[in-house]
Length: 422
Image 1: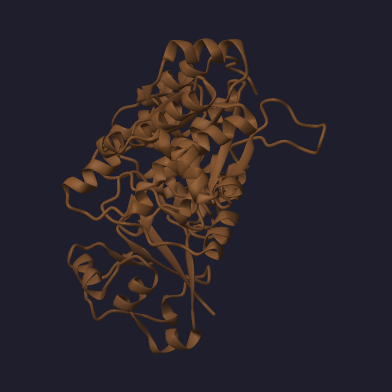
Image 2: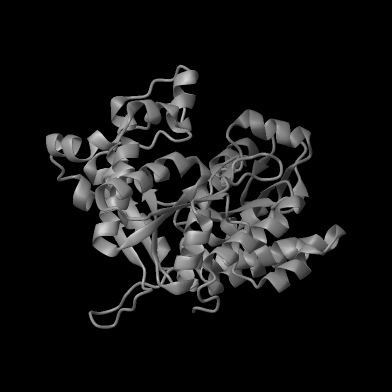
């Protein structure tokens, strides 16, 4: 802890986290002279965060590591509205029960990255805080809020922000409910200042306008100096959105994406992204990252394995990461069946009569449709127990169950699922 005491902005800059900072000299001076509190908000639209949320989580991690107090703000209130930033359509409105259920799943991930306070009397000034804006937003009186807070916002200025302007230019509907989101986010900033002395809000570059609104509101209401820091929106070198795969989002909770699948996601990183992702999504020293980044040719795969293991260890723990790495090694390098490959159970009766390869691959989530499996067969990409399938009429039966008690089905060299008789 505090290895980089009072060097907050320098650490973020050298690791590639910074896109924009308001008044960087003043923020740097404040961070070097005192302990600051900074926050990032996370809406509760799903029961887990996904890889796209990792960068803001890492911002909070480094804030604490450099001797400051991180605040993870759960959007129990703002999730009822929906942030229009980067969206072409309105989000589905969730019930309070849905939001509270999602909150339970999201809270757990932060304990992997942040140190929260213990029992009363055992806390320190850098212990993380988990707050929920439902605590103050859900009980607001609308007329009082409009009079005391809404009067500080210019409609002309709000219409100029990208989150609003882009929707209107594309003639996509923007509801009045969503239009209020930036006012509520600004109010969150002020409320966290009142409660916890928070003077810094961080987020993705698409949040700049919303954060600047909060800075302005803090100045108007309290004559206080607030700061904004945004990180670049991360895409892969191929231009794909971070955290999205053909099979869907890469969730951080193990019950939605297993540690092995998570490890494989990082192992499959494009060569051109390895150095950048090692800086952003691991806590390895920069000297070690520089050494790994210098690897060329097939040796870059060793750097990818380190990236996969270190990124997985942060989310799922060191033991799960090492087990995933061992499974991959057994599966790919030793020709065996890894212990933690994704597994689905199939009835003995189905195996006795034979399961069509088309059905098995769709059921295992390796393909979205029979047609997709047929195309993969034509491209020599379908394997059962590492043997290529050449006909769409092939079936999987009891004779295919190996000595390990499973059938290994594979789409290409990197995606595998085990079928286990039950």
